[in-house]
Length: 93
Image (cartoon, rainbow, N blue to C red; front, top):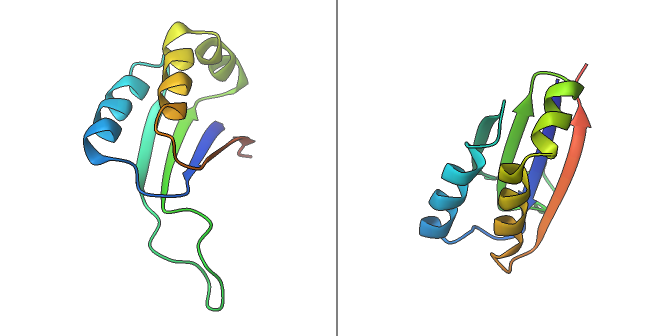
């Protein structure tokens, strides 16, 4: 399984974010999970306020999705929020 994990430094504007999620759900083969970061271990401060996971069945599905116009549009829209954002691509075994 492959995941693209987005960590937002601040909570995104709810209206814009709802539209962003609609766009993300158009990416071929994606399962989207997202929500608020509510805490971290004692003595630490969360590095993010919001997260999203785009999940793909395998590397081939991820490569197909990553080459799609929908994936590119989702990335462009994510950058348009103007708040801190980190994105990681991970492989889950």
